[in-house]
Image 1 (cartoon, rainbow, N blue to C red):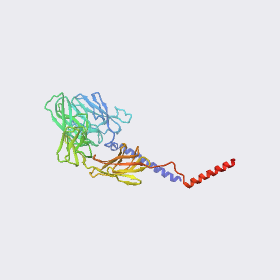
Image 2: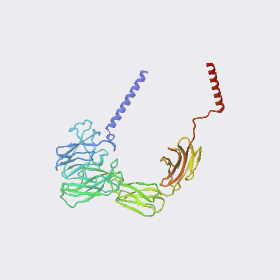
Image 3: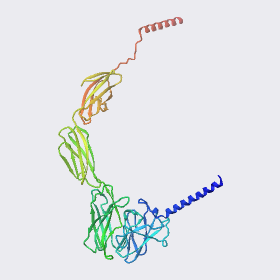
Image 4: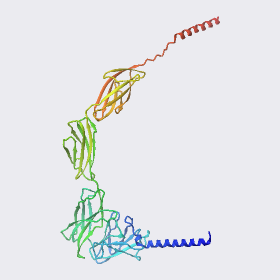
Length: 494
């Protein structure tokens, strides 16, 4: 390659490299490009406070618990956070309070990044901080990174003394249960309490609904109350619930809401009942038995109703989740039995079909004799010449009752029993002795009805002689020859 060709290519490569460098630096300096998406695994991590606040409970993301600090009035309290995986060149962390001073849940204020008081962590993150001047009974704040809302918006709390703790009653909720909580409220001037709840979505942007109860008494130092609410959430929905108190803040002379620093997440579970039925598909008995097992997860079976499909009415069974029930039908026929199980207001229905029929099937048996099939009459004896003690039969059957032929069996008077499944087949019977033998053919249908037919056979052995006679001409010639040989032998000897 010529020298004058190489030089322009090198210059072009340098320009392209500088262009890439410029673009990369521009993207790194753009704070919008450093913001995580809503599903990013980037969360603020509590690092502590200065000496003006005492930590009571540290933040737990797994347990959805924020931090609680105690502080004194008219002091500065500085809180510290690191932000693993975030932008360490700026501090896009937002916080807010329920309308205290210049803080706002909706707008938020940018926290400051302090270069002088912190060292970078081993993962490259650094401390962020903000200083609060305590002029009220409490300050609650949430920590955000850009547009990312931390899971369930669990608040942190700097408090002079008031707080609230909630507990679930019980731990599992179904689509039928109202959600119940116990609240324990601490301190004074509490004028009301309640729950905030919302459906959990990937964006955590669902509006909260409030359930509020007024409290007449004031100067409460500790109070335990219960609160509940009905819901219409579908099975599988996750519901975030937090308790709160309404306090008359004697420092700001305002009525303010303090949310607890704990977010319960309730998953609505299914309690729709399930029913398993066990009953005969075919029977010849008018006294029919049916076993049911009804279950409702996290609930009880309150009622079971059985419709026997014979215009006899509905049979009701109260508060029994499994049982065997008998019903006497007045006539044969096919019945579609329905069983409905109730769990409070939820229900499920299952069906079982039964055919009650009492018509016996019919059958035909034919005996293989000398290569031909012979059908015996009832009680008839069929002679068979055999070389071994066995006989072969062709059997077939038909059921007009509707349940169908189950099997056909042949049994000898010596106790040998052979069965052909279905409505036809070939059967070979072995015997211990020659002579006459009684044979019973039984045809079974699926309802339990039977057809019986009896006949007999006479096993006659085929004769086989071992002393075969020598043909006449061949015998005389052989004898004459032997006499001639004997005479020659004696003559030579003399």
